[in-house]
Length: 447
Image 1 (cartoon, rainbow, N blue to C red):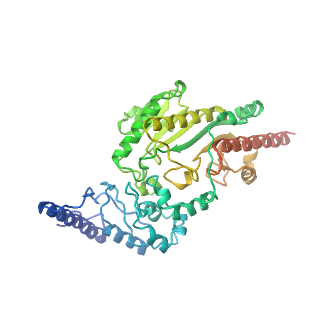
Image 2 (cartoon, one colour):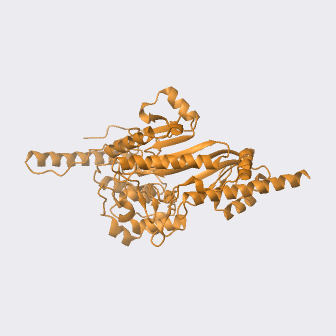
Image 3 (cartoon, helix red, strand yellow):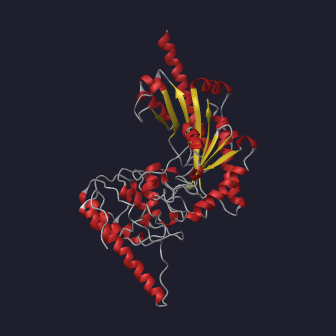
């Protein structure tokens, strides 16, 4: 048995490939021998080829070498695929100065030793959970959940991460949800101002169904089962929300172009991204798809970061109308889950559960694209006003930058500890204040 390649790989990489491959052969040989001898062979994980999976390099020679050693020593995982492998860390990772995540700050040697052998009933481990944060040092959270049990099994790591990210302590606080759009205050005069200044409105959140794994830990069977439940939900939507589901793997070129043009299409996550490093791109594109209604004012992504991302949107500033459609979508997903004897992943402390702790609670982002020419001259002043309403403004080049065409993306900053109604109301109130100030500045400039 020898390496096939000669060029394009280093000597270390080629010898490592030979070690990994022969190690797999030996393990399989022992399983076959045990079976032939009448003994009960251990349940065999799929023999995942490492030929197309390569560890990312973070640029620290010692750490990269440690990762290579950990990969070689990691036993096959039933969730492995030809292009992805889960590592089993034998010791707490020797984090570098490049690692910035809250997971890295929280995970102590004692916690690692306490949790390293803990596994959910779906087979998700601490090593699975921290893999993205270990391989991708730039990530801010650094930990993912592969199923609902993770939030309890690994709460000693997850709860401090949630508190660090959201300023919300799930050990002592409870979350609340309110999906009643009639509770929004959106008077006609404010709605008229939004109609003048706001170019588009978008509200999105994630929904996941209990009993099935999250994408970072999902089996093929769970992924397809989730898709089946969601198809039922889409088929049961009321008439204004009815539309078509597009399986990602079955798109024609024309459909792909159309979805891409509308900004509806999502792509396989790359190895540099959270989802790619966490294993959420395995088995692409099976069990994944996109739904939108005929008027393209509601959109759902199936099995991307979460099992279902629900999005309501439209051109203009009818925030209340968009929120009404968002709530209808959420209720439809919940109803479809319950008709299948399931329920949504929810927790009294954490709200709606999802793959990344950054999107817990409501998981809701309500945003408008609003044109503010005068405030655009002083982005820092705009940011100060937004901070008073717990809003996050984004210019054309991200935070702290002006916006091309003075068109700002303004959204709620918080996700957990407030209800959906409260967060959308904060956005309405804050953007209304920005519009009023914009008009004052414009009048002063004209006088």
